[in-house]
Length: 376
Length: 86
Figure (cartoon, chains in turn brown, green):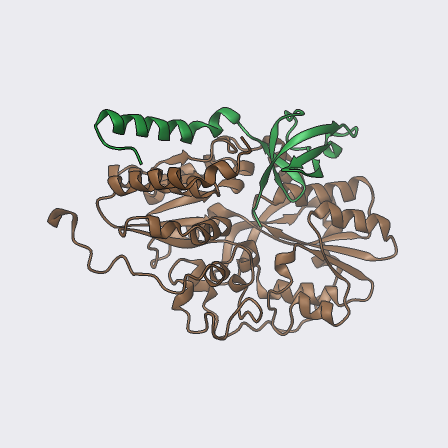
């Protein structure tokens, strides 16, 4: 058992899809939170296995997509400074800022480097004491333990030339923001498995109860997603609204306690701007106390250039599950991964990139002309 | 960005403070040094779920079998009911 390829078995996936078809009696709209899940769904063609009654809408769980344009502009400005080595996960490089991306500024000569881990950036700071090393700490709860550790080790080892430009966001407040919007079409959620690996799933219990939505913690392989959908549909059909855990090989109810303790030591919770969604209260992290000296946002003064979003990009509607990528007139025409108008076309977790790469240019609208359960 | 990959621990080096606990983890032949600070229960031979250089969970091998048992039961049930399992 490798705990990976076994969950891609086509026969087993077909069996799960059949179980879903048996369980469904009427239309349901389910949102998968995480962009990684969106990519599995689109890449594996899971929507084609599902009965017409089930609509999957893609959620805001793409940290690259929700990082505000002001922060991309700030990253570009910091990266352009001659004393700076700017480190980032590869996904962020092509994301368009108001006038430039990190990739553009790298092409102009800035020292922008792609790293695998924030600890790689910390290592660079230790080996380049004469330079300022800045890590673009973007992510959801999954990535918070790693970034917290980088800040903690920098403080512990007195690495003064290391700082983090933080854009850390949290899933539960975004779910609540979606659910309390009057446009909300979501009836059940597949919660993001790796976010819950870190945080556990107790914090979803009051959300499921308050909004009457089933929430199923779900993994990332095709069989995980189909089983998560089966569990959600079963709850919906039975009129239940509970939190269940499909991804039990990785997720415990209480999550990862040592990681949570490190996060609480290093970060405090603050309101955050979400690109496309606006400000959400208590929805992100910022460095606290003695770790603030490693905050790049405080270390480097702002350029003051006002941010400017592309007027054509409908990323906000896509991130809320209100529109699908192919509903956008610019999709695959004016907006491509090479020349993106918005972040969802760039990121490996962006819904637009998934639709573009895996060829899902159109889909049927399952809510139209479905017979009512009574007439079948 | 929340991508995490399972790998098998082949070696553990304790670095004093738990924050510096490092393991060599095998990902289908590729070996990488991974921080094990958040999985104090991790042992050599176990599978851990790794995200940006950190193990965030030890895989529960019994739970990992659960869906296959469910499908086996589903298949057995179908045979009992006279349907051909697919």
